[in-house]
Image (cartoon, rainbow, N blue to C red):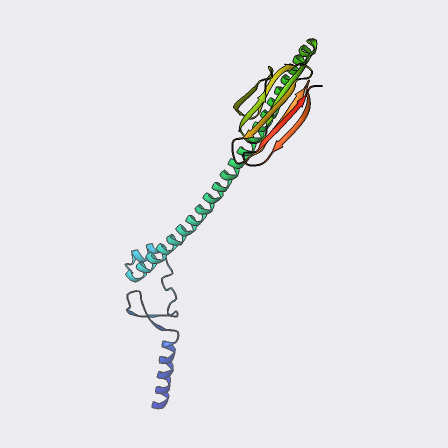
Length: 226
């Protein structure tokens, strides 16, 4: 009989301790819980634990809330960084587009201006040609052009004398000349980069074209009116 009672007590004791875990709380104190160590045993709200003055769970819930806020802030910061990067990219693309539009607008305006200028120059040249022909002479143009901006020129002028000047390219000298006149224009690049071109136009027609692409190069055009 005593043996049966002992067995019964052992059985009851074994069942009473089944599923009980000996763990440590946040402060290192030994606690007993029905969940494995490390599992949260504070499953209710912070307000609840504050109402029952459970300091251990209050601290745990406050720690959880602080961690949640920290993660939420990190997520918000990451999203804000992405938003700012996207906004900066869109602004940069907008500036590139605006600059391209402005460049195209300036190109069209420059092209239209060049066309109008060429038309006006042609009208003036036609007028000068007619006037020269009416006097039995030729309408002559010395034309200097090229990517070299500053050039030094040597030329034979309308009186047949030699002149030298420093000019800015493009440059044109116009005059009337009689048959048998000796025409001469030479242009030297004042820099060690760029190219220089010369040509003589007689009544609007080009003759004796020349070009130099050398450093401080010289281009020379000459002819005698026949």
